[in-house]
Length: 494
Image (cartoon, rainbow, N blue to C red):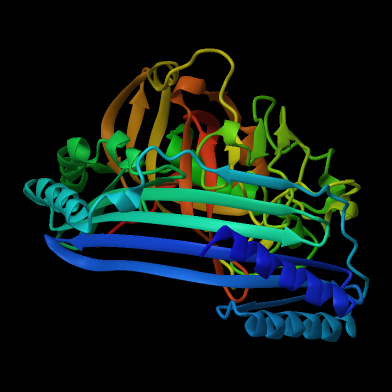
């Protein structure tokens, strides 16, 4: 549809809501397309190519929020949806404790697109499947690989945003994701290796160029061989060790033990679905020693941070992307906030973290790119290992568990290696580690430098009821933690 019609739809929403007494209104028209392809053992496991177009309306009336959505973009359809949003707001107002208080924000008129060198939808499905089948064949060419799974995912997300403050914002994002896994079944034991990360691989706001950069086919044989070799590896020893996490595992550690607990709606008890609430009560802001002095974490949605799944120019309240310090030299310094929660922590402006999965979902506080900053001095992974006398190197997440306050956790990885005398020695299977969030981050005493830092994409963060799935970004470099409890995640048949 033409952009001028989107503007007309936005005007209808704002005029209707204003005429019916709304204190504030916003309209999001979203046009999106998804392609998802997957193979399993040389056959197509799933294939879909879908499109969706619709309108979400959020209004503030009598001090309470109302939301409604519609695929009917005629004048009559928009009027019906706007009336429903207002009705919900006024019904909600009858049971509110305090009226919604919005932090002020300027009006913006802007047009932004995420960097994309190759439109992923310009690559034919036949070409996509040919690549996946080649990877599949390479994985299964390794004797002992009993299951190979591959996937490619593309998304084009275009949004027009209008609000009664005067904003008129158009944003276009491309997202690409790709990865695979090799499984080896032997006796009662299953071993798995994934590339370049588990649970779907690597995802970024890029075009098809990401697929080319990942060197998927070139790494397939090694991944298959590692899956098979794990059967003959020793079980991970149990005890307390110095550990090194690869950047992808550290990214998930950040997601679960920093990203979720800093969501201000969880802290305030407004949201608890999927990830519970948070141990980060308001009294801990600027007082809690979250980590050691070298732990610096930011929530950075700006384009300069990289092509993360949490990168945009404006959030779904029309607030510009920002970089918020979350942990500064170990001290807890910031939450993820919105226009209606900012004042609760003394802020005069939202942190700009409100996002909705699509046009038919209400915006919520979501992680943007929650990243740990790399070390300032040059330090490679090889040098980090070389300076470790005795420890365990953990690579590629396999499982995780964390309580509903995000305080006690356990993570397992697909593979590990024992470190002795500054060198990787024997391969270890079923490694796991556990701890308490603040104790763990305070035990971090080394992190590699920028050239070892990767911005990983997590495409499937769930939140809300009805559930919303959102992409988040986590930049991390390999890091070392002292005296961590290590164990065995899977013992198999005794």
